[in-house]
Amino acid sequence: MGMDDEVELEGPPAFTYGQKVMSRKHIRNDGTFPGKEIGEILIKKGEMGMVTSIGTFLQRFYIYGVDFYERGYVVGMKGKELDPVPEESPGRTEAEASHG
Image (cartoon, rainbow, N blue to C red; front, side, top):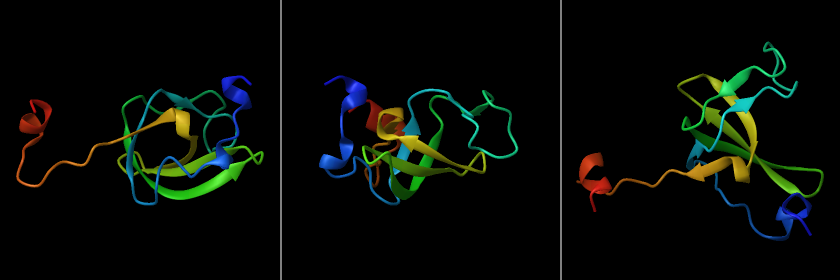
């Protein structure tokens, strides 16, 4: 079974409601996003958003509705297109957290 043959629904979702996530790559309109041309970039690699819904596609994949709040778009994405954003520890600055 190849990577695209995997049935994600056999396990739990990789992300949860309200979880902060980051796009692993540029996301282009596949024709399902109204008001934008097909192929137009909707989300750039590294943009952060929040999981607001979890659905399924083709009875095989989880689709995460991600609110990219800085851009004002909610985009449906597969788990392989997302990375979790680590939560910062209270009392530590971002620079301290990145230096361990």
